[in-house]
Image (cartoon, rainbow, N blue to C red; front, side, top):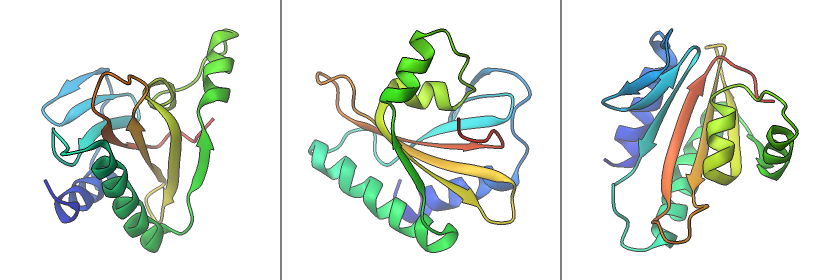
Length: 137
């Protein structure tokens, strides 16, 4: 996939119904009020390519929706460790990545989030996008 295709996928997810039940799909995973999909190629030539791709997608989302909310996920992890219930897709994204960016998608009532799954140093990073009607925690 390329950036144009990935942005079209995000637009499609913003426009269509979100799942009512938890489960996997051919394009990722989802549950009540959210869907999470991988972006970019399955294998990057280098980890830096994944971060560059994320920056390019983020730049285009910022042009569409304004500056994103941006935060580290350490606080989400601490809150979950204390037993606080963190809504999906935020709990999953927080478990995958050190940092999140989220935009309120204009005119849709939904949020679009990007996260690079990079917590496992033995695995290649993976870029994920989430579309949800659940406000960030």
